[in-house]
Structures are given as C-alpha cells and as structure tokens.
Image (tube, rainbow, N blue to C red):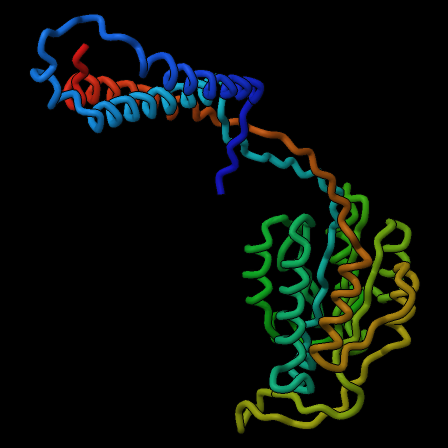
Length: 334
C-alpha cells in the first residue's frame, strides 16, 4: 500500500482560508447588483432561473474549491517514501560435514534412510541462516569438498541434493572429514567459524585421527558440533548384492559416542548430540542455530519519489472544466 507523505505540511494551514471564501461567495458575490439594466427581464428570465443560478454558483464554487485544495497539495510537496535498509551482518562461516558411507542407508529413520533425513534437515538449517556463508564437505573412506563456503544457498542446496552414498570410497574417515572442513575454514575472516559433523559410525579410514583434527580446530578457534545419526543396535540397511541385487539386510551399526564427545569438547561445544529420529535431528539443528546467532545491524535510508505533478495535471483539468462550465454550459448573463 502506498504511503504518501508531505515534505511541507505547514502549507495545509492555507486551507483555513476556505471558510472565508465560502462566506464571501455567499454574502457578497451571490448578492451583488447587476451591472447592466434591462427594461424587460422577461427576455432573460428563462435562462437565468433561480435553479440555474444555484447550479451555476454551486459548480463554480466546487471547481474553485477543488482547484484551491489541489494547489495547496502541490506546494505541500507530496512524495512516496521508499524505505531502504542496509544490513550490516557479522556472519558465521559454517561447514556441514556429512557422512556418506553405506551405513547412512540404514532405514531406522522410517520411512526414509539416515542420509535422506540428514539432507532434508540440513536444507532447513541452511534456509534459517540467510546471512551466513555455508559450505559442504562429504566423507566416507575419504573426503572432499562438495561446495566451498558460499552465500548462494540455492547452489548449495542443489549440490546437497546431489550427494548420495557410494560417491566416495566406502568407510568412515571422520578425521579426514574434519581435516577437509578445517582447511575450508582456516583462512576465514568470520568472527565465528563452525563445523557441524553428522556421522553414524566410528573412524575406520583416512590418514588423520579425528582427535588430532579436533585439536587443530581448537588451535584455529573453530567450533565443532558433533551429531550422531541413528539408533543403537541392529538396523536394516540397503546393500547391492552381487547376485540378488538390492536387498535389505540387518546389521549391527556401531556409533563411537566416546570419540564424538571428545571431538565436541575439544571443539568447545561440550558433548555430542544423538539423533535417533528425524524430530530429534531437527531439534538439534535448531538448537545449534539458536546458539550460533548472526549479529545484524540495520541502517535505514529513505528514497523519495515526487508525485506533485499528478496534482498539477489535476489542477489543469479542474481549470479547464471550470472554463467549459462557465463559458459553454452555464453561461452567465450579467
């Protein structure tokens, strides 16, 4: 909705003149004596009836009144302000480090598997942080950067959608996942640097131990939130059988909570979080979202669009209409 304001509203005091004009029209102009004398008024009586006289004065008065009000509005300078906000953000640089080992196919997050739910909740997390740079690292038996730190979250989400189990050599190289994430954050100028590690296993591959990587993150001032994804015990997992094709088999899936707790403590976030279902994962990411607030300050500016010329057009129209009524329609006979 348009919000019209006036730059010179003091000129609206001129509208107080309107009652004086009305009094003048009623008591002076309407009762003035004729300037020409007629010997027989029957010649003009029909064309100058009281009804016609009333319409004549009323129309002239209305046009003059509207014309005067329009002039006052013009000099009061109407404008439409546009609110311009300059946002100064002290953002957080975040790396999502996601396990894509085959165990992430486990369907204990029914009806979907662990990786599918992790991706969906990661999207919600990304959408909740529009002012931050976020990157994506994936790891299995090795790790690599799926998306570097970016403010373009649309591209990030598209690349997140593309990740799946089997993209990298199988295994769980948590230390390498952390090392790649740290490498992406080490040159960051952000006030706060964060790694969110999502895994469902224990470190069994890679060249770097996860505790060593966590110590490196601590030295560089990088926080690490660790999230263990999945239930305890036996879960069904989809495998590619060489003869029978895709089949679900029951496996004992072991999550190394002890190591994840050590990583979290070294990363300055106390203990690891455990997500046994999609709701718990959502709650954990919401908690992290609230803990890592982005500081935002706003500077408000206004741009003004002049609209007085519309009222100039209206004033010209009223002036022309007044001439037409007085010269062609309600012709005044002295």
